[in-house]
Structure formats: structure tokens, C-alpha cells
Image 1 (cartoon, rainbow, N blue to C red):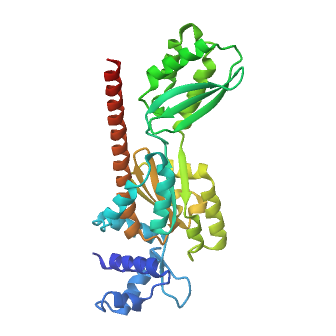
Image 2 (image 1 turned 60 degrees about the horizontal axis):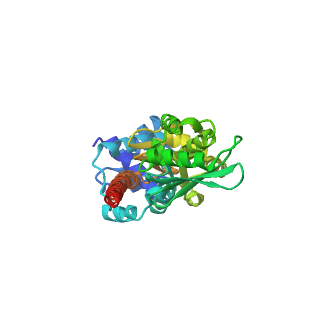
Length: 348
């Protein structure tokens, strides 16, 4: 490793560990006094001229800039990833629910890192649809129910201007179930809803409110879901000035902004440092995110994140979630096939 890079890496890691400016004597001791303090000071001066170090006080040591953290993170990406406790992560993920992955994964990562954690997914459930039901609760008021195989129920109120008979409602239920049972909400496209409408035949106009309600249920079943945990961890970190912390917490409280931040990243593993995000509230922060299936999990904290620990941990955590979701889908498919086979045998 180049000596300047070695010194810069040592400064970054010392500052991550202590949150104190790093001096030449500390570095000399770290290198076992194989490099003199005078040589280290000269190298540090050159690194400062390149904008990689800054000196908060005249007599103090140096601290890394955002540019220094970027060089350090890029170096970590080139190096072999440090090991992580895969068994522990696998055990944690095994206890998560596929239907509540955004909420649960964020809390776990916040606890593991001591930072704020955000989890984002484009798909609430991979649960196959068990049945579509309709309940009449008034002369022109109905509730459309979508029940999944795991027992989750979603509902939508609907109002009919045109009188609807029980025969019409039964026609809708029959056609909807014939086309939707075994599928997920992501399969309910406008084209499929149109096919259901055609299947209702002469009742198409009267049943249009039911078709609209089904569309709304499908939209609700696949909307973006985002969860944030561990914001309080940021209050205990000395890195943020009070006004900077207020801006960051306001940003984190806006779920729409968080969704934009997470949805804009497409790399399997991403690290955004300081102003790289283009968002003023994140200027003094770093965001590490990893993708899984239809979602993304991220860690938000100061630029002084423990990247060497967080990057490989989050990378493996996301892969473990992905495996869990795939296994869940396969299990649901197997259960669906067994249920259909059992139903066929019963009919015979």
C-alpha cells in the first residue's frame, strides 16, 4: 500500500474509533514506530493540501474530510470484505416475517449498528390471494375483501349509484376468484381487471364500482412501504452540530423524501458520503444501502461510520433477506399446489 494511503487509512480508522483529532504520535505508535513522527507530519501536511484532512484547532491533530472517507470506502471496496457473523444474521433473518420485512428489518439493523436505519420495499406482500369476498353493509354500500393465504385481509369500501342485485355480486365474486386465486396483488393489472369486467358480461356497467375498488386494493397492496428506526441513536453522537442534527431529523421524518432517497439507488451495495447525495440535510452524514428483492435496507449516520463493519454486515444481511423472501415464495407456491391438488382429489 502507498504510504500516503496507509497514513490516510490509519487516520480515518483512528477517527472512526475515537472521534478525536489524530496526531502524528498516535500514528507512529500505530505503525510500531517504523515511520517517524516527522515523516508522518510531512505526509499529513500534503494530505491536507489535497483537501483530504482538516485541522479543527491550531494545536490539534487532523480529521478526515468527506473526500478522505470516499477514498477510504473505495479502498475497502477493492479489498477483501472483512468477515461477518453469518450464523447470527441468518438466525435473525429467519425470525423475520416476509409480510413485515420493511418494519422488522429496519429495527434489527438499527440495533446492530447503533445508527438510524431505513428499510424500503416496493411490495408489501408475496402472499397469494385466497379469495375475493363482498359484504353488503347498506342498500348501496359494500365492502370488497381481499383475503390472502396467510390470513391477511385487505378491504375497500365502495358505493353503487346503480342498483346492484345479489346475482350481479355473485357473478363478480365468481369471475374475480376464478382469475385471481393463487396470484398476488402485483398480478392485478388494469388489463386483468378489464378481463374480469368482460367476464361479468351484461353486468359490466353495474359492477364497475367493484372493479374500481379491486384496482384500489391492488394499488394499496403494492405501494411503497418505508420504515425508519433508531433516530434516537443520532442524538447520542457528538458528530452533529445542533442545527445540523435538527435538519437531519426533519429530513428523516419525511417518509416521501426517504423513499426518494432509497428509490434513487440501483446498485446492489451503495455508499453515499456527505454532499454526494445532493441533499442539504445529509451534508454531514453518510448513507450505506443494500438491495434485496423488491426493496432496500440502509444505515444513516455521521460520515464517521464504521464502514469496515457496516458495509459487509449490511451486504450479507440484504442477501439473507433475499434468500428468505425467495424461500417464502417457493413455500407459498408449494402450499398452493398442494391445496389445488387436494381440491381436485376432493372434486373427483
